[in-house]
Amino acid sequence: MMLKLAGKVALISGSGRGIGRALALKLASEGASIVVNDLDEGPADEVVRTIREAGGKAVPCAGNVTDPDFGDRFVATALDAFNGLHIIVNNAGYTLDGVIQNQTDEQFQKMLDVHTVAPFRILRAAAEPIRAFAKQEAAEGREVIRKVVNVSSMSGTHGNAGQVNYSSAKAAMIGMTKTLSKEWGRYKTCVNCVAFGVIETRLSRAVEDPGSRITIEGREIKAGMPGAALQALGRMIPLGRAGTPEEAANGIYLFCAPESDYISGQIISVGGGMSM
Image (tube, rainbow, N blue to C red):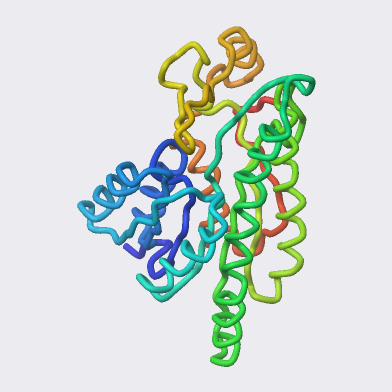
C-alpha cells in the first residue's frame, strides 16, 4: 500500500505532547519524515523514539520557538537530516489569560511572541529553501505541492472573554495564512489554517487541576481554564464533548494530505460544531 506522505518532510512545532504529538505520529504513519519540536528535550525524544520504533523517520529539535534563532534552526534541522521541506505546521503555544484591565504589557506580548512572531520567523526561514526547491522542480517539469498549516483557535475567529492577548495573536494567524496563500501560490505551496475549539489538552483542563501547569522559562503558568467556564463551554458543543488530540490532529491532517492539494487560504473550525 502506498503511503500518502511517503517522501515528505514535515516540521511540527510543539509536537512533543498533545495535538502536536498526535499529528507527528499520524504523519509518520503515512510515511512522512518528522522534525519533532518541544520546549523540553524529553518529550521530543520520546516522540522521535516512538516513531522510529514503528519504522518511521524522525529527528528532534528541542527548544523555545520564541528564541530569535529558532526558525532558522528548525528549518536547518529538516534540511540537514532529510534534505527536504514539504509540510510546516505551526502548532506550539500556550495561554496566559486575564481580563484586559488586569493584563500587563508582558502578558500581551508573550502571546504575540509564541503564537504570531514565532510562526512568522519559522515561515520566513523556510521561504528561501521553498523558493529554491520550487524553482528546481519547475525546471525539471515536476509539480510538487507543499503545505503550511497554521493553528489558530475559535478564540481567534470569534473572540473569548479573558483572552484578549491569545485571541489577538490567534486572529493574526488568519491574516498570515491569507497573505502567504497569495505569496506562496507561485511556489506550489498551499497555506491553510485550523481553528480549534475545546480539545483535551493541558490548555483545556480546569485551572485548579495541577496537570494544567506549564513551565515556561523557569516560570510556572496556570494554562488551564476556570472549572465553571470549562463546564459552560462543554454545554455549548453540539457533539456533547471536547475533542481528543487525535481528532484535532486529523483536522490538521486534512490540509496535509494530497486530497487538499488545490485548497489554499482557508480556515476550518475543528470544534465539534461549536460556534461560540
